[in-house]
Image (cartoon, rainbow, N blue to C red; front, side):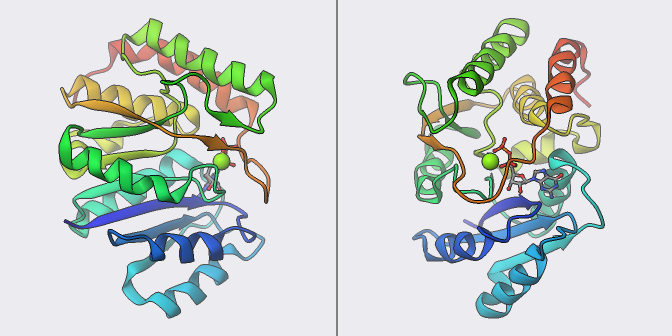
Length: 236
Ligand SMILES: Nc1nc2c(ncn2[C@@H]2O[C@H](COP(=O)(O)OP(=O)(O)O)[C@@H](O)[C@H]2O)c(=O)[nH]1
Ligand SMILES: [Mg+2]
């Protein structure tokens, strides 16, 4: 069973070394793939030092400019499939997602899930250090997606997700359009449409301590209107 964690990075110089050490130390052997968009703060140089330290378990795709989270993941997914990984995870670089939880997510993929979602909202609102306004927007977005698409998921914008490779092989990755939070919704929705089992595993999400959020309000508009189009999507 080969497992890989894909982490898109844009200006994560404060986090990326510690993140690499943490993931490498986990039981269960998770490899790493970073997709860095030419971070001006030198994130890629730090990753290359870590590649020298850990060898082929740490990998890097470098892109020339900030092309968005969605396209970074699509490139990462294709790379992971080409390299025969069985379980493929998405995670932020900022420790909002606790890397220790990868073990629980991985176990769900082995047991009862084709897609496992590290979910903030199945046991209330498990978010630490976000202003109430941001929690309510995020929770409201998930409610909106649930009502419009019938996806049956409480945390549809979650960025802490594990996929069995069969799911990423089935979805036409070239047809995924959205790049921000909408990307997360679109991927889950297409997996559901293909008949895969989506399961939520409760996690606690803690706002980043170092670095700044790269998400913007235009991403919000993309998701709002993009969701309305989802029920009309073709499968292939
Ligand atoms: N490669 C790449 N990574 C990105 C981009 N935008 C955000 N990221 C990374 O994606 C992850 C999620 O972004 P983040 O700023 O934490 O968003 P938030 O958690 O919603 O505030 C982080 O690891 C970021 O460094 C992008 O355009 N390109
Ligand atoms: Mg984050």
